[in-house]
Amino acid sequence: MNGKTYIVGMHTKRQKSYIRLCIVVFMWLSVSLITINAQDLAQIGKQPPVRLTSGFSIQSNYYSVNNIPYRRQPYNWNISGTPVLHLYGVSMPFSFYISNQQLGYQQPFNQFGISPTYKWATLHLGYSSVNFSEYTLAGRRFLGAGAELTPGNLRFGFIYGRFQRAVEQDTLLQSTPQGYLSGTTNAAFSRKGYAVKLGYGSERNNIELMYLQAADDTNSINQPLSIETLAPERNTAIGIKHRISLRDLFWESDGALSIYTRDMRAEQVDSSGLSSALKFFHRLFDPRLTSQLLYAASTQAGYRGSNFNTSIRYKRISRDFKSMGAYYFQTDIEEIALQAGTSMLRRRLQLRGNVGFQRNNLGSDRLHTTHRLIASFHTGMQLHMNLRLDATYSNFGITQTPTQPGLSDTVRIDQVQQSVQISTNYRIPSMLPQVVSLQINVQDLAPRQRTVSNVNEMRAVNTSANYSIILPESQMTLSLSGQGIWQDMTHRTVRSIGGGIAAAKPFMQARLQTQTAIRVFSTSFGEDSGGSTLTFDAGLNYRVTPRWTVNTNLTVTSSKGSGQHPGEKFNEAYITVGSQINF
Picture 1: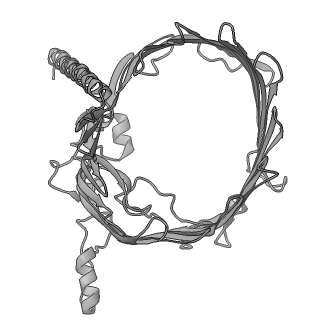
Picture 2 (picture 1 turned 60 degrees about the horizontal axis):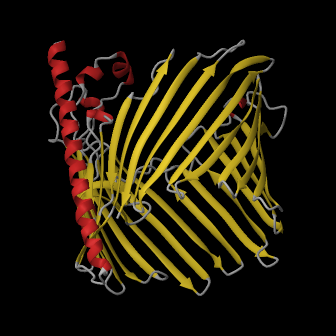
Picture 3 (picture 1 turned 90 degrees about the horizontal axis):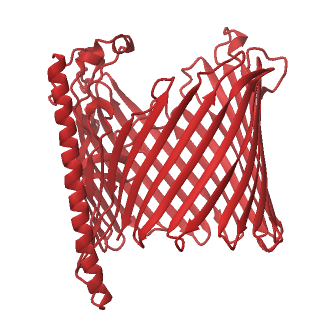
């Protein structure tokens, strides 16, 4: 590919992007005019059988910097919207997001979906995100179709679609040092699947069964260069969840079994000698030598009253648990936690807290086991009609012990991370509304025993104060703020002190909102200066009509480094221009 062809291709892509932008803007304006006419008919007292409500947003961003590499693209734009079409009582919500940003694999992030609802029926078309349970289909975005039906006490759901699109391998990226050293391919198979939910009951008392089946399509891409690093996968997950409520008492559970095959090309597991029932399950799940039987479950029971609530929760997730209907799980974990909260003194005093224990190494196949103690307590009290005080304490303990007696003591870790936060707000009795707020946050990480070696210690203190006043005659709000951050670590101390002033004022009978702020921060490393940063913000928000607003914001940052740990001196500016319309 020569340079001339590349430049022509780039111009062609840009022209197509601008053409798409013009088309969307034209459609937006057209729909706006049609909607305004529909609103006029509604003002006459007639309810139209067809009605469109929506929110649209257009935003452009401009960025410039000198003396350092660009930290974002110089220019980008995006258009998003959530139109809802109401047709004879049927709600049809749409959603879309269009941008010139090139995300992974050089494809724009353009997604469209619709989920019309009528009484107890919901239909999903296009890009959708559906949640059947926490451990089966849990919000994984897919392209396809589905339906959720809740007639009476029946609870039914079904979806089918593509969970992952096919991506051909980028040979140019693979040939770079970063791509070669990563050892992984940047290609992906197309992944399709379906999920079914069947249940019975009300919101307070119900039981539901879930089934999910998804697999990679090996014919969706051409022969990749690194086929050994790209294996087609398959997943079958079965879940069950329930909720039982008796007045203020409740018990709910959610669990799933997942058979995850990491390479569908692996040899099948021999089914000879199995009973007829086991052969049926063998054909259903098609286990192979790379298949894993994984599990995840959680349950919670408690009491929820008007002034007091408490519950106990248990969770257990096996190592490497995965479901193609979800994004991420914290695996190899067992947790039990107790929570309680109450309000007293006519709800002027609130108390709540929880304590829990966690551990990993459920299969006893790791070299060490980590135990965690998690506890937090919060109290909030309205001391006076103008004075409120809140305090929070949390404790996160980590204990790591080897499971093999011959291991060195260097793997023994016993640390405690403590956090204390205190905040207060005081409204000054005056003709002018004034508020003073203070906040202190202290975090401490240290071993339980000071004689333990190879463990880092750190203490961080963050203090902030803010004063604000409203001038009724000019409707101006002024605020002063100050902040100090101290971080004491094993080998050095970092301090950052600064503050700022901000002002906000409306004009044109509050149709135009303006705000501006200046902030200065100075940083030091031990006895050496680390430089300073000056930031200026200014913004305008203009309400053209009750449903249409335009806004712009400017942020300018000037940073100067000095001392033993200098940073690059640079100036950068970031401008945002946008418009929102709701009808």
